Each structure stands twice: as C-alpha cells, then as structure tokens.
Length: 352
Image (cartoon, rainbow, N blue to C red; front, top):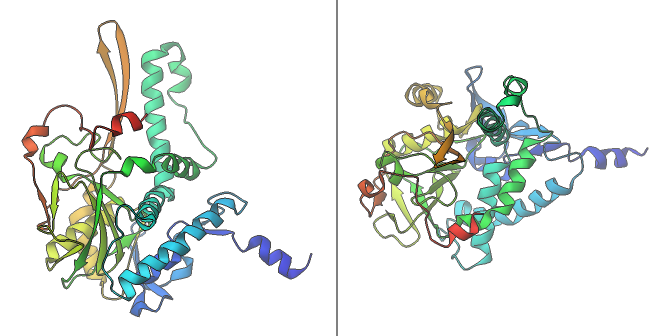
C-alpha cells in the first residue's frame, strides 16, 4: 500500500476532545506550541507541555472519520469567531437571532458532552439508576444485578448524540462576555464547560439545578486567560449591571472561584498559560479539591396512592459561588421547596 494512502488512513487517529485551536489560546507566550498543565492524579506540574499531545484519545468518536470530520468543520467555523474575540478584541457576542449564536450554543453544548469525563459520568448515572430501579420494581432480579455493571462501547458518543437532540433546551439564555482584568489569569481543563445555578444554590435546593431547562441556569466557558463566555438566565440575573455585551472583573477572588470550578469539573488535568505558577495551582487544589467527586446522582421511588414513580436527577457540585458581576433579581427564598422550576413554560412541552 502506498505510504500516502496509509497516512490518510491514520491521520484522524487522534481525536481531540478539547480542540487544539481552543488550547492554543492558553499556550505559553501565546505561541500555540506549549502550555502549562497540572495532572491531579500524579500531582505533576508541567510548565511547557507539548500542546498537540493534550486532551485526545485514539478513535474516541469511532474508527471512521464521520463524526470527527463533522466536529472539525464546526470547530473551523467557531475558531473564526474566537479569533474576532480574542485576537482582534471585538467583544460582541452574536445576536440571539443569528446563525452565529446558534453555532456557538451548539459548540458549547457539544463540548460539554464530547469528553471522557462526560462519558464516565453518564455511565455512573445509568448504573446507579438501573440498580435503584431493579431493586424496587424487579426484586426477583436483584441478586443477579446488584454486583453487575452496565457497559457501553462508547459512552462519549452516547452523551454526544443526546446533546445533539437537546440543543433547543438551552433556549431562553442570554450570552455575554466576562473580561478578566485581574492579576490572575483564567485557567481551563479537560472538561471546560461549567454548568452552575446560583439561584438554586442560594435557595438551598440544588437537586436538578444544572439541568438544561432549569430556572437560573448559568454556563461558564473560558476561551482565553482574559476572556470567558457566560450564558445565563436573564429573568433571574443582572449581568454586569445591565452591560450590553460584556463586563469586566478586577477581582482575584472571583477569578480564583471560577478557576476552582475548572479544577473541580476536570477529569484529571487543568491547563494554563505561563503566568500561572506551580504555587498557585497547589493553592487552588488546597481550596477546591475537597469538592471533587461530591456530585450526587439522585434516584428516588415516589409513592402516590397505589402507584410508584421513579425519579432520577442529580445534585452537582456547588461552592457558594459569589460573583459581583452576576446579581440575583429575584428572592431565592421563593424557590426553597420542591424541584427546580423550568426556565420557561414552553420547555415543559419540549423536554419530552
């Protein structure tokens, strides 16, 4: 077989679940070749790690190129928008009615579900839910199932395909930018899209709070050490005291909290530019590592008369997040009881 044919067959072997165009914005000296990383499994700090060797798995999206090519095409279009924002500093998020807004929302959603961490989380949720369901509704099968484990050939694809079906559930969110003017840069990770909900956190009612349709949902996605994309529920929050497109923060503490969410949400690695020191990463771990692994899958049997219902949900990590640029416009006490309400009534019909 000719060498060029062989090279064509294997050139898509590495499937990067964090796009290289994205990681380049966190590279050393912004040169796109090296970046800093910290591996939480082996406590290893690397100041100059080869960028091309990070955040990939062989054939993560299958052994043909169909999905990898589709993702690459989308990345090419999104990278042009990122260039406007991070290189040319045109800090205007796309308008909600534009194709650019739809593309950005789709890209962030896919990014959230195309990582190995997402695949692991999905399988853990399915296994815990399956065991609760079988124990309650099929007790005769419990002995056979209690020590078993559901497996899937490619749980990452399972999550990615589900996200494709649910793009519309991120409707009724606004998008603005947060500019980091503090002395501390943003970091990112191998699972960089953060779902949060300060409304339900302050209501002390966090079960289901980070679901796609939840009232008060927030999404934090750093795309540069100095820039973060924020989606938020505009009925619930005032972003930047009514700013039109972006606001800024000079608070090291706010940036530190947002960096902490990256560390908590990561599977094993955080990434950063050359302004982040090993001492800072150690301090970040000291503050936030205790939250890692504290997310809960909620599986309950609800009895109503002579009928039983199976409820599955989750309680994701929350850290008493405090951000001056995002202020509540409602009283969280009004949401203390019951499940997290829907962001908009139309989502009730569209969630099924």
